[in-house]
Length: 460
Image 1 (cartoon, one colour):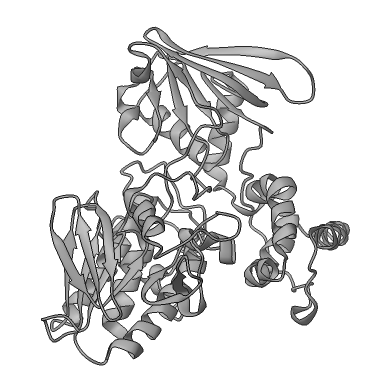
Image 2: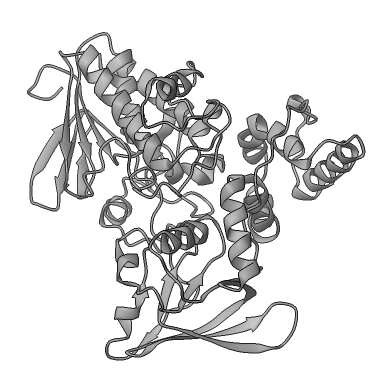
């Protein structure tokens, strides 16, 4: 226990995971608690994902499934009904803006703190660069030189910025035309008539295109990815009965894909959209992943993941319609091909791309290059100082596929020695390798409740 008699927790990351873990710690604890919430961007209660001020950046999940509480499914809908900024529409229908959802999370945190005045939350707007873990406490060091001692630490660090498939070559002034992280604020430097090249055609690309359009951008946008796949739109579909037996889940990717294809074909013959079939798998996705061997997981990542991503993580229909209109008008060009070379020069950027399906090599040029290739999923390459320090000190290790951090029971980090920690925990995207589906609110909110339950029981 720290000098303050209250149980004290450190939460690294102020997005959904960190916010709702703080809420559950306060609400579930039988005694008052103290929480340090660390977020270098000071985005307490919303994080990067829900801090966008752009109303065209919509949630990718219907509001009816976006309650912050797994046990209170109507919570977000009721908040929307009472919120003057909410759209004038039937609450379960719209995909509201992510910025509005950020307001909801901040409101939920504020209401929790007001209802439990004996507990406290201290926001620290500095980056956690390292930590030292003892048997019963942890000391965190931040970039400003401060040290904070707590009883337990939970890593809620979210996704890490993307990395280009190839390392760019830059001459003097060339780096000024490259935006490595689209959420760093660099998009504001792009002029309306500038041509823009985007690496990646997924959800990040969609966000960047919408952001540019909202700024009045008129120049040509070229988006390149290996397969040229783009997120598919949502449709209004009904529920579908689960078709995979929980006690006999397939343990190979080949078997799973055959079963899914057969079910989709059967559903289609009955007039049922494929989206209903995939949505019915959601409660079983984590169990499916855990039932696969490491070799089968690798096979999924190599052959199935691109198809899974665009079918599973869809966009709101208005967003899909706007993107399609931009493609139809020629303002947005989507290309499938393997990136071979990137040159950054003072006059702009130039990329060499081998077109998919043939031997054609094309050179794409533009004023700007924006990396939209999605979050970094190779933890062996992540340069984040906290993650590197954890690995160097042996306090954590990558999972078998290096998709994230290795995890034991009760979300405890596993160290280099293979032993699960009693004081270090992780949830959300950093534990992707253990659960796969752990990036969306419906998945993470369960983790927040479970981790808070464990922590409040073991520190009371």
